[in-house]
Image (cartoon, rainbow, N blue to C red; front, side, top):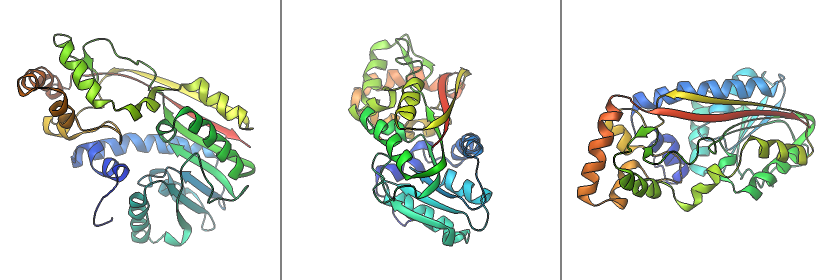
Length: 293
């Protein structure tokens, strides 16, 4: 792991997402491992494949692919964060698999470092949400370009447009309807302008972009989950230190920015008991898409 985490992508993925809480980080790892396994199942890996993991992050999918490929198989870790690539390289060295890996700076919508028809599989997980709509479209064109004939695309994306916006007075799955004005202020502070890309598409757009890029044999699986729970969970201290995505502040930072000290006390007095009782509600949707060139 690098001595210092510098960019926001690495800081969020390795620290702020879990609020710096090891137990919460382990819980999240178990959930994302299930996403990884389905992405790799859908990729139909062959022993000698070259897999390009776009937006590799901390290597969740890429390292999982190495476990499934044969000795001749290779994985390319691609990301816009040099810090995360350095982190993954360090892990690969510890696992003694670095000779089967490549680490490349590139954005999903501009895979210029990679030649046409140079890889067998492209995977992504929760990457397209950070591109605007035109960038999302270009990403599918780039995926198609770098894949060899018969190559496979396998992606996972949350559909955050589902359940958005939440009912008035609801905050990250918690019922704060007695204080809707304070909820609106904190919600605004938690949602910077760039975050709009997280809710500007749905599963139908993904299908349209995949087909327009030239893919064949497209299959999309859509799932919606409604039930107890919230992404903003854990101890109260963990929740205050948590951030929902790399573009957003932590809850504590948002409260400090949006509310007066007196308002902050009221907001926390309503939210903290619900967090400690794990009384949130989860309305979430996501999709798995696989396609063949």
